[in-house]
Image 1 (cartoon, rainbow, N blue to C red):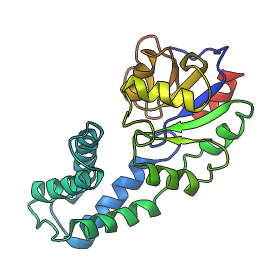
Image 2 (cartoon, rainbow, N blue to C red; image 1 turned 135 degrees about the vertical axis):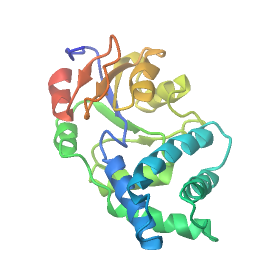
Image 3 (tube, rainbow, N blue to C red; image 1 turned 120 degrees about the horizontal axis):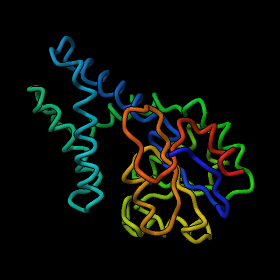
Length: 234
């Protein structure tokens, strides 16, 4: 569906990973480097990034559901990866994950269209609604130079344990902007969490389709770059 102007929008919520920050590139590079440093020449090295992405989704969902702690989901991810690749599980999982985490942080970068698009949205209440851990997501926003531009960083940890696509995550985020859900537009790359999920609360949404690999969700607008967003809102 072609994106059309949206009158009545007073606030914009951005997803973070995959929308403002190139999470996938940073995570893929970090876990590949982590494995290479420990097991150089492993025959399945080219599969590591894809395996890690699957495990990330699986165990973050368990954390969001309250089935494990944030630290435990990290342990689960590393343990499962090592077992899948038939390599020894690190004895100190916290230290091993910290090594990955440092490599990951070194790769944090905004998409080229991020800063300009956000800067053009003066006059709108802005915020970030993300499913990551609060301290890390705040650090990401600072690292890519948006801390003074995007307003509050909101995660399930500050929204009563409600992560996207829980309706309470959207209503809570709108309230944090001082607005009703129908006055807010959510922009993100995940169809379930950022596009169709908000609709249950009356919040509007735009799918940011950077890759163009999936059909668009029926009835929802799509943009392919954040550069299209200011024009859509003006």
